[in-house]
Image (cartoon, rainbow, N blue to C red; front, top):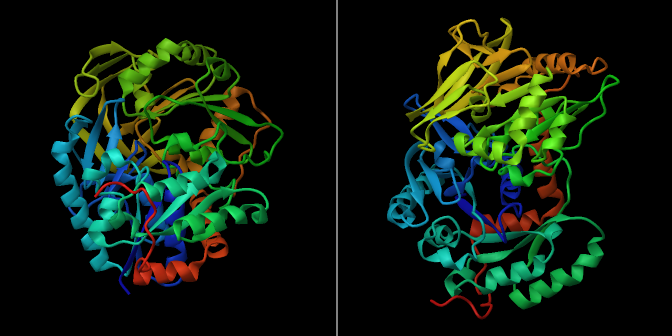
Length: 512
C-alpha cells in the first residue's frame, strides 16, 4: 500500500503529537513500513540527528519520538522546517537540520515559498520510501488568517491529497464547538478532506458523551473515530514545556525513607525541558516546574534548564527575584544544576553578540568561567564518561561556548577523547550536554551525590530504573490506546483509500 493521513487539531497541545505516535506504533506492530512527518514545527524542544554527511542537524523532539514509535532512527526529513522562537517576535529557522536564518512575522512570507518547497519534497521522498506516512499538523487548520500560505495543515493535505482527522482535547472544555467550528471555517475543498474526529483526554462515563458525538455526526456528516481516555502516564517527550503540569509524571514511592525534591525554573524561552524527564522517572524524585522564588528555597536540587535566549532569560531571572533565590540556594551549599543555557547563566560573564546582541553582561558568578557566543551553532551527538568510568551519552545544541575558565576547575563530564565538558564547583554543576541523564548509571550516581549534599541520607536510588525502557513503555501505551479506543478498521480504510467521497459541506465555510 501507499497511504497517508494528516492528524490535525482544534488547538495547539490538543493531542496531535501523541495521537500521531500512537497511530505510528499501531501500524508498526502490524508490520507496516510507516514514517512520521511534520512539515513545520515551532518548538524549542529539539533532538540531534547525524546526517549522511556526518554533520549534526536538528528536528523537533516529537518527531524523534514518533520515529521511535515506527521503529526508526530519526531522519531530518521527518521535520524539514523547525522554527525555534527566541522572542515573542522572532524565530530561528532550521531547514533540514541546519539553522539558515532568523525571521519575524513581518518577513516570514518572503522565506515561506522556499520552506514549503522543501517540505513538499521531503514528504514526496518519504511517501516513495515508506508504505504509510502519518503527518502531524500544527496549531489548528482553522487559523484562517494563515491559510493562504499554509503548507503544514490543510495546505499540505490539499497538496498531497491526504485524508484528515481532527483531534480535540475535551479536558479543556468546548470540544464539540471547536470541532464543528474547525470544519465550518474551512473552504469546500479543504472540508472535503476532513473525514472525522478523535476526542482526547476524556474522563468519565462514555454514555454521557455519546449524545454529543451523535449530534456532531449529524451536523457535520462526519464520524468520531474514537475517544481516548485521560492517561496520566503520557508525559515523556513533551512537545512543549506548557504540556507539563506543575509536577512531572506520577512520582513513584521512594526506595528509601527520603524523597528528593527537584525544582526546575520554567524560563520564558525554556529549551529542551525534556532533560529533566529522566530525573522524574526515578522513584522518590519529585520534579516540578516553577516560577516562584520561594519554592526554590525548599528544593533539594534546583535546575536551570536550557534556554533559546540565555541573556534575555537571565535578565528575567533577575527581574523576578529568582536569580537571588538561585544564588542563595548555592550559597547554602545545596545542589544546583545548569544545563546548556542554564549552565551559561552560572558564568562570571557572558559575551553575546549573536543571540541577544547585548555584548558583555554579568552572569550569576557561581562558576569561574566565561561564555562567548559564536555565530556558528554547535549541533552534535556527544559521548564520554563521568567520574572516570561511568558512560554518558547526550547531544549539544548551542551557540555559546566556554571561552575562559579557571584551570583548576574540574569538569562534570569528559568527552570520549578525554577533554573536559562542563564544570562542577562544590554543589554547583553545569554542562552543555542535553540528554545526559538518560544514561542510567550517571543519573543514579548524580542523584546519590545530590542526596548527600542535600542531607537526604534516607534517599536510595532504584537499581532497576531504565529510561529507555520507560520511553518504550510509553510508546507501547500509545499503541494500546489506539488499538483499544479507536475504530482502527475505519482508520485503515481512510489511510488506504483516502477521504470518503461525498462528505457534506458545513456552512458557512471560508470563501474560495
